[in-house]
Amino acid sequence: MSLDLIYNGEFFPEDQPILSVSNRSFRYGDGLFESIRVVNGHVYNFEGHYRRLLEGMEAFNFEVPSNYSVEFFLNQINSLVQRNGIKEGGRIKLSIYRKGVESSYLSEVNDPGFIIEARPYFSNYFTLNPEGIEIDLFNEIPKIVNNYSIYKSSNAFFYVNASIEAKKRGLKDLLLVNSRGGIIESTNSNLFIVSNGVLYTPPLSEGCVGGTMRMKIINLALENGVKVYECTISPQHILSCDEIILTNAIQGIKWVSSYRTKRYFHKIADKLISFLNEDLKANY
Image (cartoon, rainbow, N blue to C red; front, side, top):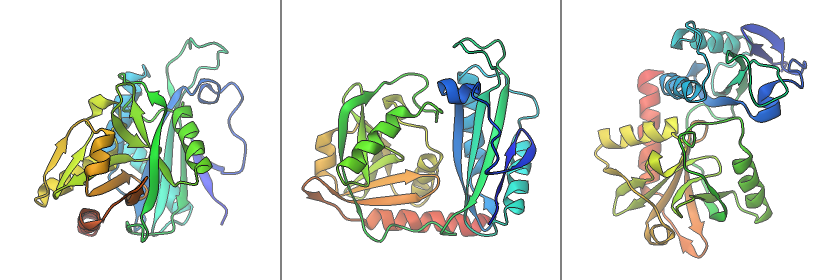
């Protein structure tokens, strides 16, 4: 199927070049992005994505146009979803970049441009991986904790490098550490552990991405009587917990079967995926 994308409000064929080499996201990673799930042809949890995107643009000193509202982006995304014939599951990537074309770090303008991509996804609802994934620790390079840590920046080399290392080790994912030695997330997901039926997750102050699915899972768990606490997670916690759960906006929930010699269950992960799909059915 031939797919289109939206570039600053206009449709273009996905395989047609539209960016110049002076694009600042290409040159410097000067931008942000959101990965968004589509269910039954409708965007899921967009308000959470929009909130993080807006906060990110302000943190990265973009001059946010007055028309960059929830309604504006939803209309853009929905028009592309329809144009690309996505009637069930899909995935959206909304990218923001600084429009300046100067070949230096300093840009004379801070206006944003945007690109929206929409592709079908193999599953309509969220499904738990039938077989757990094997993980280990990536502590060769720690993630620096600062005011930008919680946003999804176009400068993603830290995650790219960790993903390459996971592949080298023959693993599906690696857990990442911050500069204080705490375990904060994986290469593409937020982290939860389970001990005695209670969920624990690192706070944003530890430097993990402020994931939209992370917040959704916290809220759904609390609404359904599952206790959730934010706390620093150490390697000792990983070895002593009952479950390791990874969450992101596209896949939803993944359960981990092993970390080194330790094996895990997925009892709470089963409950969380049920809560998530019940929320979908009630709203979409």
